[in-house]
Picture 1 (cartoon, helix red, strand yellow):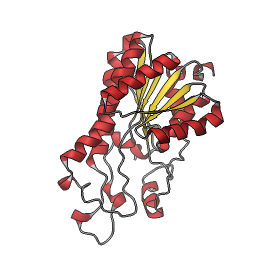
Picture 2 (cartoon, rainbow, N blue to C red; picture 1 turned 135 degrees about the horizontal axis):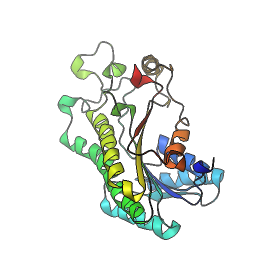
Picture 3 (cartoon, rainbow, N blue to C red; picture 1 turned 90 degrees about the vertical axis):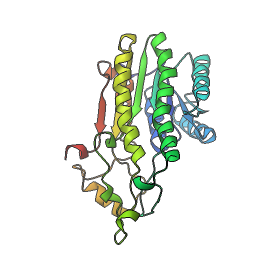
Picture 4 (cartoon, helix red, strand yellow; picture 1 turned 180 degrees about the vertical axis):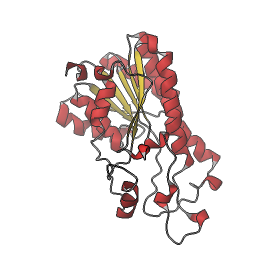
Length: 273
């Protein structure tokens, strides 16, 4: 079990104030790491950090403001982590814009025919360019200082297309049906490509890079949506919010030290049907 021990290592979780970001931070803290929850909502990040510190110990989880689309903000956070804790050893690229399509709410701008370039650019900037900028800054530091781990949070939509039937509302015309936006699939698929590139690029510097592709998580979705989705999953349920913790611990620790450039799909079996 020593290979799972992260004592003495410092981790950064982008988008850390979100639903899964908080869980990723808790998973790493549980194994002994000092964790910085970094989020564009700095106040919420600090609130989450304070809550987790009560569980794992004072100073073990920290909150920080971070705009992943701003190279200056990324560089400043990286320098702060180095100055205050001796450097980043783990980076989880979790920040993303995930447009939720539940409850039959129609967002007219989500459909491909009316999807604006401005929205496309913003969501690509946060989910993909942000991961590139953070990997560039934190990964470069790791490569110069003995290595580390980068984990990109992709999605089951990195391996198959969204099933738009999940969101259909009976009686509405086809051109008014709610859909999962194009950007989410594009970003998550591209993150797997970025994972492979970085894994090879820094292999000789002992920087391991992998991706985790989670499936859907229970988060108060309407029963009809849950019913539709679970029929597509061999395990016949969505994931509980804490069920990805062990995968995070495995991928970020020496337990996976011979694994790099891979996309671990953890979706209840949906992608094999």
